[in-house]
Length: 327
Image: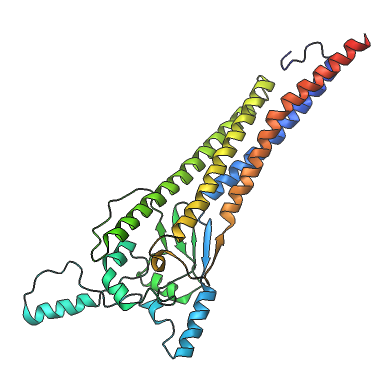
């Protein structure tokens, strides 16, 4: 008989097989639930959230005390930027009118960060972004694939999205594109921004890659555990347990790397573009909670499948030695 159960009475062997199937069924149920939670976490956009309600209230109170218009920069983020790629002169009044229109060009919410950096001199000269209330901030939720604004929370972003000025959801980058030439920025800062972008992309790729591998290995473990009901119960149960533990390792690496990528993204320079004010509430959301619960269930199912064959074999050997000594 497999599993070192030779000379075991038929009644004891039948009871052992029933326990083994019960353990396999329990581990299969846990792993299936874990796979469902992990899939939910992968395809939802609530890994990390920011809530700017307290920040908006503080800025409105500060504006009311200083007599400034309410949240003026939230609807008109950065106006009067210099002419980008302006050609030569010509045209007298016509050229002047075109230039005056170009000066009113705005970098709206949802625009590429490279556009902000391209107009670096004007941004720093105005000092708009260096003040905590000068940068437009809205409540967001982000996942592995998209970052979205909350609707129905802030009427300003609702208006911008309705007018087509801002996009509600923007994709998360997983490819490195050669950045445009950043004018009027010190070379060291330009190089730092590009290096930070590359490191952040690397962390994102590790997160998505290991999470995908965890889901694939977990699925293979479920298939092997299902096969154990019909063929080589001890062997397939042990293999499925090892697959579950491997999926847990991959999932742990992915979740730790995601936390590192979030911290790295918020600590990038310059802080008034990439960082967040202290009064912006932020934290992990229910999608990453699903991933952590999935990790716990995966490890539990793996431990069940890998330890039960050893425990059952030890019990069989003890019962055999007890019978031999009695004889």
